[in-house]
Length: 106
Length: 155
Image (cartoon, rainbow over all chains, first blue to last red; front, side):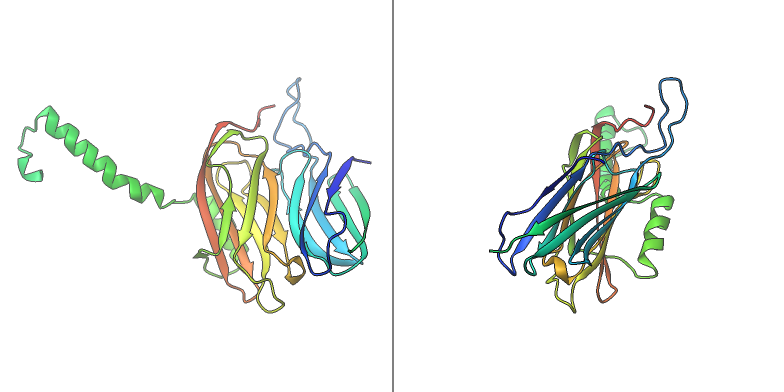
């Protein structure tokens, strides 16, 4: 399991537009580099990120090798109410990880 | 001053002419003539729509010291209502090994058309950001970024 950081305001108001920031520990190996022995290193990147609220997709990103290591993504979301936000990353070599946050609304 | 230029111009005249030439060439160079490969990538994404300049802003430092992780923010002037919102934002580059950088899919649920990430830049180059609206129109913003230390491609 890769380490993730998910940052959002602790108790936003319903209808408020908040910033959601997420980071995941991942090398995002481009596939264009060689190791010390000159052997090409296999591509290993995250290709998809998706944020869902109560199962409905609210934001989606397609990532390419030009995204820096430990991908950071920030986006806005209008708070619909209390519920579960889920964050899913998918990538090469069958990578898949989902984190969930129970959102409280003031 | 052209009248002053004789068949054998003096050194001073040549220098003055050179200065004028540089001045007149500059604005044309700033009009960002994009590489064919980049133009093709953009055309594929546009799906027949002709990009118009405006509405989208690609926010990035004009002078980048380290190309390994460059913060970028995309903003689009849009009310983000069910009828008028940004559907997709795409960023393309000119001189990385691949033209694609990132694509964001948005909708009215976002409330604000804004997204950020950190990207790699192999060298000084043009970047193009495009936004596709709910009505199918495409808007673009292109700029040049100077990179002093490139993202390592060799290892």
